[in-house]
Image (cartoon, rainbow, N blue to C red; front, side, top):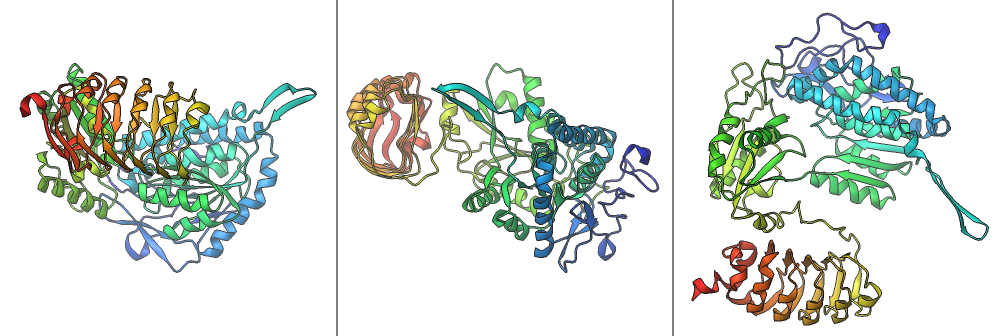
Amino acid sequence: MLPASAGALRFCGSLFRASAACSPGLRGFASFPQSADSGSNAPSVKLLINGEFVDSKTPDWIDVVCPATQNVLSKLPLTTPSEFEAAVAAARDAFPAWRDTPVSTRARVMLKLQHLIRENWDDLARMVTREQGKTFQDARGDVFRGLEVVEAAAGIAPLLMGETVENVAAGIDCYSYRQPLGVCAGICPFNFPAMVPLWLFPMAIAAGNTFVLKPSEKDPGAAMALADLAQQAGLPKGVLNIVHGTHGVVNAILDHPDIRAVSFVGSDAAGRHVYSRAAASGKRVQSNMGAKNHAVVLPDADVDATVKAIAGAAFGAAGQRCMAISAAVFVGGFERWREPLLEAARSLKVDGGFEPGADVGPMISPQALARAEGIIAKSVSEGAQLLLDGRGVSVPKYPRGNFLGPTVLAGVAPGMAAYREEVFGPVLVCLEVGGARHCRACLRPHPTLRLPAPARSSNKLSGTLNPALGFAWAQMEALSLGGNGFTGPLPGGWQAMRKLKSLDLSRNALSGPLPPEWSALTSLRQLLLDGNRLTGQLPPEWGALAALEDLSLSGNDLVGPIPPDWTALGGALGALALDGNAGLSGCLPAGLAQFAGSPEVCEQTGLDCRACDEAG
């Protein structure tokens, strides 16, 4: 037990029992409930407003539930509008003095905070396992990754330096300064209840801002404990404030005029909402959302090392992390990888997070479990092969837990639910491609990928494309104008952009034929023209674009055969999309035979979709 004089989180009675999945809560400090009784007697989680941990006056509460036992650990308040206003007002009022506090003093608070986190590392990890369910070792890693950010915040001074340029013109010097914005806010997910809060408030506070934090309503304990340690480290009143709730308090954060910037980590749907609504009110926004991360496995990869890495990345933390590997693409076939991968998955122990040897803990909620199981079932009905089924896994000590064992699906096609959606569970989908250059064709259609990823336009520009810009932009190497409202033809004059390597004009309303003159753009590696209204035949001259790696013409009104001259594209081309052009016909030139049968080439077209020599 750590002495209270060391600033440690303090306990009354025994420490967490290693064998208990949801052991009694941290005791003896202001921010966290004093007991862990379930049901109506469960204690309440407090708010942090102006340096004080206070009870909410709200009539509306939600349960914080242990994922392994379904026991209610605490009651979380839905912050009232007046309480939210008080938290923002406290941050606003604290800002002038904190902004003027020397950076060395702010850094010293971060040094003290990282010291306190290290002293209480295991206690914080127990808090994470208790509420979130992940294994104790995973929870320790959760705390450690956040601790690294606090250490970086303690050395923030060089990041706050401005720049000076003398004599930019006669008698003119140029200076730049980095100034804190004011009140910032952070919205946290459930899956990293210690790391993500430590991503957000330490850097903002060390830079001179004040902060309003909304932890996840599913596991607020670690954030509350960290706030308690931050107060002990010397944060003045009002610099850090904590509110609780769901979408109501999130929208209040996004709309409040005194909040200047918002950081969010969470799902795609919520992230898009956060970004659009906060940006509409003039805030700076960073929105970190979900993904469908792919591992591309080449035939010469080391089997043991690869299988170990994939199993850990796919099934660790019960797959509930946005950087999980949820899709593996096996180049040259899956068969030699099948048994080693299944053996590694079967060897993982599914159990309560505090149990010795546990590798995979429960999912966060019954709803999350049901969603993952539903995606598995749907994918099987769509034709996927269920090589390892983790549904209904037996965990005798925790029969009510939200457990899903490692699950492996093979024979997965891009249109299936398990591939299309982020499952956010211990589910690995396995795909096969014939060669390395086919990987791009496999990956590019996925909505979370779009490879490679040039800057994408988020404007709504309109009008026609000026041919003269080809000369004005002759030195440009990448141009992204996708997702706007451009109309009219593709400008012939753009062949002057001889250095252009990436051009994205997708998802506009462009019309007319593909300009043969663009055959002069011989540096092009990526050309995206999908989702327009382009007409006419494919120009034979484009066979000169031998550097093309990614060509997308899907969803237009193109007609006729693929020119034999396009055989020359086959050397570099890894991704080709022609689907949705119903008027295309004929077979595939010999140089494009690798795309035979590809849905990105063949679907909703009149193509024979065989190599011409096979088609006769």
